[in-house]
Image (spheres, rainbow, N blue to C red):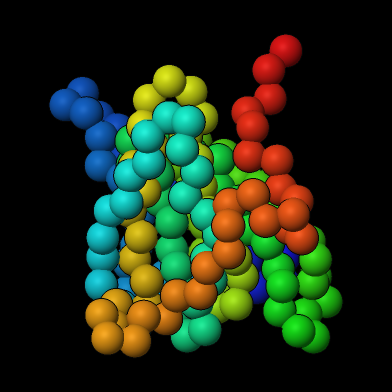
Length: 151
């Protein structure tokens, strides 16, 4: 796994009425602080990628549909530089992907439905000077295959 990336199974508490899923608590050992909370959604056949942050750590939880979340390490001096990680998360496997600063990331839906991800970054979004640095989803240097495997 890419250096600094963490994957955490989430606590799902079902009962006869439905369920409650704890995504993030301030007493979690990986809690670094709170900047804001937002939801991002992507339609089937669309890829939202690649970008990274210099300051913020992202905390992805897929709350609707299923998402293929991909990470690429391009950090100078990282022992996992050049490596990629892929996680499929969502209603069938409730997990949080913790993405440290400097790691490129993106996602696409798996299956026929849109994927909706709640992100709880450690920093507020700065509209005047965004902490967001982008590359094309099909950047040949990264060479990631965003297709979904069949067969």
